[in-house]
Image 1 (cartoon, rainbow, N blue to C red):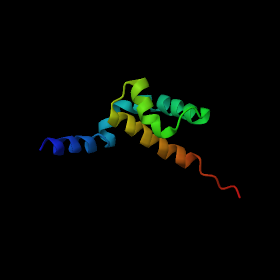
Image 2: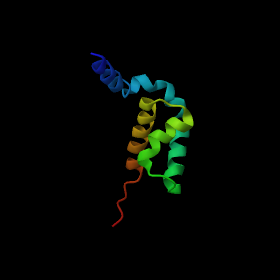
Image 3: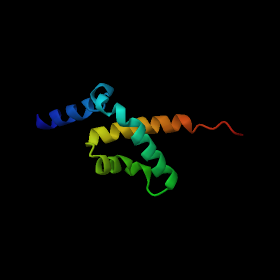
Image 4: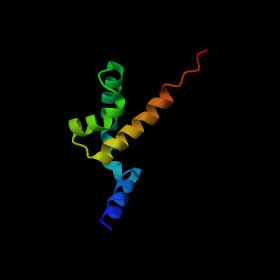
Length: 82
């Protein structure tokens, strides 16, 4: 029973409605993640942990920010050069 509650709360945390408090800081988070990516200082799969450590986000918040950033970065980095 306890395990079911934990799993349910984890899935709820990824819904956009529960992350509204992060909206004002998304630009800052994206700038930081872009800098980290361009610097090559770290593997970006470690970015959610970096966000937790540097911005005191919980696991769900950090993953939400990272997911939004990766969707944005993938869209913006599509190249049609031949």
